[in-house]
Image (cartoon, rainbow, N blue to C red; front, side, top):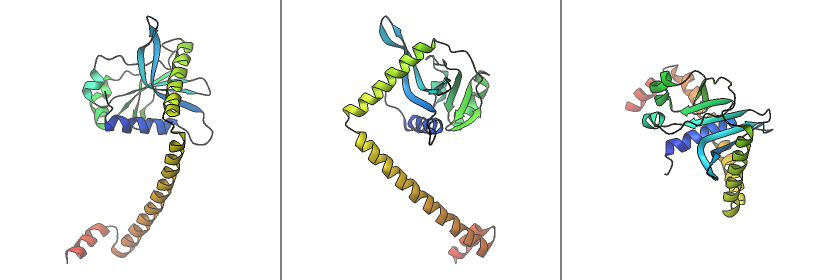
Amino acid sequence: MAKTDLTLKLEEEIHSKTNTKGMKSEFGLFEVTIGFNDGRPGYERIDYLTYDTKGTWRAFEIKVSLSDFRSSAKKSFVGHYNYYVLTKELYDVVKDEIPSQIGVYIGSNCVKRAKRQELAVDEDVLKEAFMRAGARDADKLYRGNSPMQLMEAERKMKIIKRQKDIVYKEFRALEDKLRKRFGIRWEDELKKEEAR
């Protein structure tokens, strides 16, 4: 089933939050399948799983709708710390249904801290699953012959971010000029002037 735009947005936000800048200390992968069922991989899937250099595992369940949140599908809370990643609207509806030990992110903002727990599965099972997911993702890049495309996309993203920062500074400077000319209610004054 194809992911919705909202699911992709929440994935991007939680990935950005856990993908630290500079020296990388936390590593994350999406759709990590753990365990084996009759010799086949995959009795449980974690939406997003991270492992850090201190040996801490964090599992994230991404939910975008009430039916998704309340579905009978297994919640893969297997980490030392476990979280839901939700929209604000969904969180407002389900916050009383979330167990006390489970944390919550609204996009990239932690609104409820998780409590540390013992791992729900053996750590070797998590490590093997993490390696399989990493190998799967590396294989996708390799087969897609896209490492250069990825580097080019990252370069373009940096340029766009710099441009966005410049435009934002220009916007703030213009806003300051309007505030100096018209006062704090500059928007009302500007509308009056435009109406003339």
